[in-house]
Image (cartoon, rainbow, N blue to C red; front, side, top):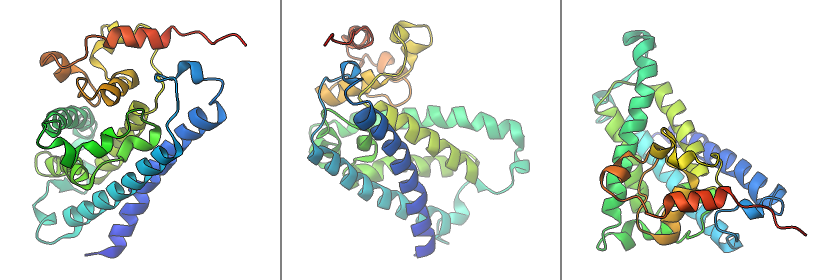
Length: 255
């Protein structure tokens, strides 16, 4: 194995996680903790041991993601057979930019169905229980997966690299945007405005309230970026819109 590539991947993937989750944690859980408590989706904070558990499993996930990256990009038995290309000119700039929304749609679809499968009673404790130990998630929960789930999650990279032509920067930019949205989903605070969940566009977009409900209740709300599959299969929680509005209409308590 090319250890230099492995440690570069650790630095890249881990750096994104600790930077984005760390900034979110610093703002909402440290600096503005008291001022914004009334806006927190669940009006309490996780315990220190919860943060440490989330960081520990996230570190394992980062190592697994990095190991798989080494195999996909440097293993001579695998790398030559992927669809990775080196020059943007090969497919042009139009293709280059159109691939991003396609990647989000592909990832959302992959996530929804693998997520539902991991909720099967025979698989849940082996794959997904670790992530659901965060019943009141913090930004550190973004990568807090059991190693078996981490392997499932990194499978989307395999899908990308064996289905559509992918430039190296597609992956760099896409996974940066992914971790940002993933941290938002586990933030514990809702950043979209009041009424968003019922809007013409917002009704199709996943929110922090939506994913927080999934962590709190374990059932329903299986999407990642969008709510298309949840609405198609009727797996969105019936109390989602009401919960969203309740969170967004709270007022600070007078001292």
